[in-house]
Amino acid sequence: MTISSLPLVHADDEWSPLRAVVVGRAGRACFPSAPAKMIKATMPSEHVSRFQPGNPFHAKLIAKAEAELDYFAAILCAEGITVYRPEPDIDWVALNGYTGAMPRDGLMSVGNMLIEACFAWPCRAKEIEIGFSSILDDLSKDQRVQIVRRPESAFANTLLDDNVADNTTTATTWAINNSRPAFDTADFMRFGCTIIGQYSHVTNQAGVDYIRKYLPAGYSIEMLDVDDPHAMHIDATILPLRDGLLVYNPTKVTETELRRHAVLASWKLHAYPYTPKAPSEPPLYMTSPWLCLNALVLDGKRVVVEASDHQTIQWYESLGMQCIPCPFKHVNSIGGSFHCATVDLVRESSA
Ligand code: ABU
Image 1 (cartoon, rainbow, N blue to C red):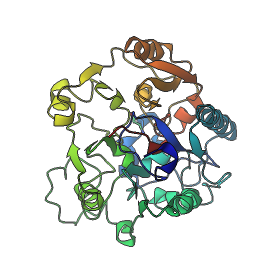
Image 2: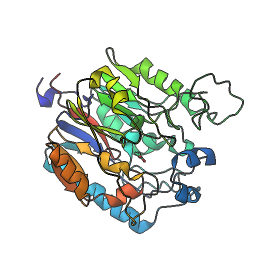
Image 3: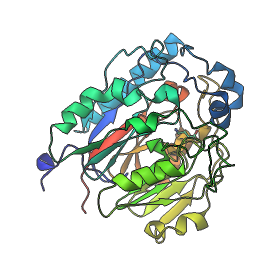
């Protein structure tokens, strides 16, 4: 199949040549307000008090984050990649939402299918609907594309109910129960027909079962055993740089655990060799400093990396990657880096 004849959604790994992608927009972003149990389980302790309804990120921070997202999108366009952007200027404060800057949390491509997250956090319930409907409408004009929208049943507000019978082994570990499917798509990484995921404070067993039910034929999910009491999103824990080479956060996952998964058994696995440091300004309000692993691979040879992170750039180069530096500190401050801020739509895999 030639590139132009590929479906508008056609991607199932993290490294094949990227041909089309969504890049988020911050809009009038605010601290997501969620029940205290959800926030305390996942957000940096020094910032939990900020996660109140209607608490906007500072306007200057948002303006800089928006400029970084635009610059990132321009880099990708210049590489010949088709870039889709969500609606501009959405007032997430008025909507009691969060932002449109982190679409990886809410959408995942698997083959020609795009799966919408069943977000655990109520403030994110309508994030895809509000920010990304026009993109989904465009994609759905291609009859070969299947979009799995979040069903009404996944909006039930029961994830923190104490009286829900829950026999899953994860019940005592996580903030949420198993009363309805819950997952952020950023808790999953795609390796062709194998998807590796993690349970977390936003992803439960019912959520994993839900994805399994909808996956195209031939795809399967394997769960990674991650040592992370604050787990929320796998995309600063493991990152495939190309077919056969993966980098990982050794404080959260072991090489033995990674090799337990057949798809990685013969891969080169490299632990990040440093302790990443958070910048003093702007603060990382929502994440750990491990965003150095939240990079976007363009084609198994090139990777987009935060411009000021010389340590990571040198390390990726030592692994044979060419780094494309892009300033992204203000996007980092509101919740994620290049992987979080994108959704792969088309990667031209050889398979
Ligand atoms: N959304 C990625 C953030 C993961 C982390 O804080 O380590």
